[in-house]
Amino acid sequence: MKTLSHYYSVLGLSESATQAEIKKRYRHLAMKYHPDKMGGDQQKFQEILEAYEYLSGQKKLDKSTIHTTTRSRSNSSARNQPVEERIKRAKQQYKENLYKEYVDKEHYFSKLTSGLKWKIIKIASVIGVFITFVLLLELLLPYRFENDRINGANYITMSGLTSVNEVRQYYLESGKSIYFDDIPRYLYSTPELIICKSFIFHNNRKVKFIFSKDKEEYATQYDLGSHTYLLIPFFLAPFGVYLFQRRTYSYVFFFYLSLYCSTAISIIYLLSNNRILHLFTLGWF
Image (cartoon, one colour):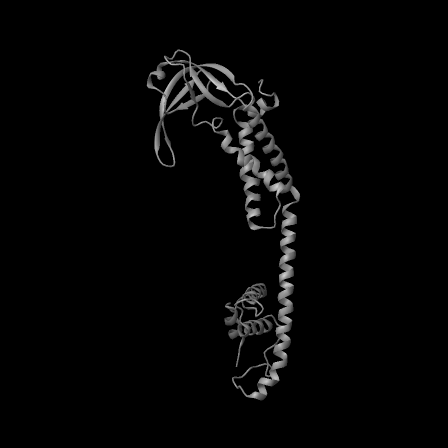
């Protein structure tokens, strides 16, 4: 004699499971053991279906529905027709579940590409493309030169992926700082310098020490402006998400990466070092 405890066991649930949990578990197991799928198991599927019917209240436990262990040919033939009907109904429900999942997926992606989040993606894509255009344009424009003076210096430790470097930090009269780790030591006592900056964003590019013995120029290091071209993929990520819409989980990943990470990087980049002011004035201020 089969009891409700047996049917809970078939679905792998405790007897305190709610109807929502029963339905969810049934759908999961039905998808896994459906006979139309490769690796499906019709007998297991039939047991799952039977357990769901009783636990969901579609059928009631009574004397007419209790299965015994008797395997006589007469009893077997008497049950053939109801089993076929239940399997046919389960197949139909399986197809309906697939369609429902498809509809839910389409609804999720249509919701993803509309509303406030999608507006933020579109705005971030415009900003990112514009920043990238300006950065590439700066490669064709001349440098801006600013005279400055060193007020002090200090060693700091910079930890990299493979090593730890002792970096020299220069404090400038303008209140800013620049960093080097590979310039000659005799330059430490040279106070006057010229900073070469990009034309629009005023990003540091290189430094020339005015009274040095050599006339070499040294690229600035450990500075956001010096490595700004490495950020171009992040600036362009929202535009890629806007342009190449897909119904995939990888698209969802890049969508939220662009929404939160790329958008934040673009905002921080524009707000730091007065870059947004330099942009609006085309670098004149």
